[in-house]
Image (cartoon, rainbow over all chains, first blue to last red; front, side, top):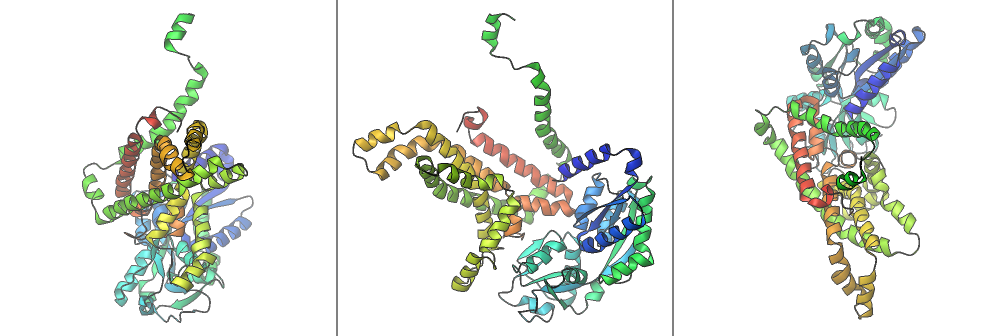
Amino acid sequence: MRTVALALAAALLAACSPAEATRTVTVFAAASLTETFEQLAKKFEAQHDGVDVRLSFGGSSRLAEQIVEGAPAEVFAAADEKAMAKVTAARLADGKPRVFARNRLTIAVPPGNPMGLKGLADLRKDDLTVVMCAAEVPCGRAARALTTAAQVQLEPASEEPDVKSVLGKVATGEADAGLVYVTDVRAADDKVDGVPIAGADAAANSYPIVMLREAAENKLARQFVQFVLSDEGQRVLRDAGFDAP
Amino acid sequence: MTRDSTLRSGLRSPRLLWVPAVVGLALIVLPVAGLLLRVDFARLPALLTSPASLDALELSLVTAAISTLLCVLLGVPLAVVLARVRRGARVLRAIVVLPLVMPPVVGGLALLYLLGRNGFAGYLLDVVAGVRVPFTTAAVVLAQTFVAMPFLVISLDGAIRAGGDQYERVAATLGASPWVVFTRVTLPLLLPALGSGVVLSFARALGEFGATITFAGSLQAVTRTLPLEVYARAEADVDSAVALSLLLIVVAIVVIMASGRRMTDGVRP
């Protein structure tokens, strides 16, 4: 799948003349940033005439892997510092990553919380279908840090490849509960409710953003990073439920 | 070129076809070669024998074997009925090959909305029998059977129609009941086609990804088969994802060889 995507991306890039190429900026962002970055991209496009922000969302670790393998990303926004480290270790970052937001986990439940769940410990109830992120992705790492700290051993029915898949399993009613970010619950409107987790702040993850060396010639990449860090960008993130860095 | 040498060397394909033909072949060979170059052979044994790898391998082999068995039990009767049906055969055939042309992830969603908690069959099962299918190994088997069965049915259907029915007619005129004709005449004649159908369905079941991750989720030793394990590992530990991919390729080659000369000789099933 990745090969096809790369081939398509390469074909697209080849199709653009150099002048046109600088009118686009390609941003790889964590799945949990989907709604916020779509909104930020729209605002950015409105401020820069004729500019197209191309967004690719996915599990941060997978995106980092794609970047290391040569995906034509110009900006990378990860859901934790470990995923970002993979890109900086490969010397693909242009400058130091900057943390632009923080996010906490919460328990996503069907609207109205029919099971009456009150916290992490309730997820151990028999007959409850719980899903969470796989240990390889940031939301999975955060979830494990949280359950370890709370000394609650969970037995998930599935370990999903990214946080939006977890949310989907709860929103479709296949799972009774899922560990997602507070921002995911807010973005899902009335499809799910959130049950706060005590101590979630302690296990919150930091979202770093960086411009990649791929974008050395592209002013738009730097401007997009600055826009995310600007007061206006931060306001969008805060409205979506992200915490200040 | 003389007529004589043409006869000796057989018909030659036009030179013009060679360029796209080589490109086509390279499109298959080069990616596999690229993967082989990435394999960390020193760590290969350790990567392949990690508990997660062994769990995935065992789960894959067991579920693919059960799915193939289900494909045979359901697919053989389906193919026989399909080949002999007088009316609506075209419509039936179109339905049977649907999983073949439909994206597997759509198949997974379809299964979910039938057997998931909010699907009508899933709801009934849950309320009446207390059975929940999604996130179980049974869901993996269902997803694999769903995508693999068309391969078996198509192989057999073609063979039955190509073979004609003269032997069956003779047996019937000699007084054999339809069941005796089926077990003593039809089935033995179909064994070669059944063989290649079984191999194809097994291979398809083993490689199943989209329907499985959508319908069954991904959990070690329960629903995370080899392809799902490769996908999960590609997040963080590329070396072991590559090692497992190599394993899947080896299994695929074994499957092609096990199918004997039927597949490699280009014999129509």
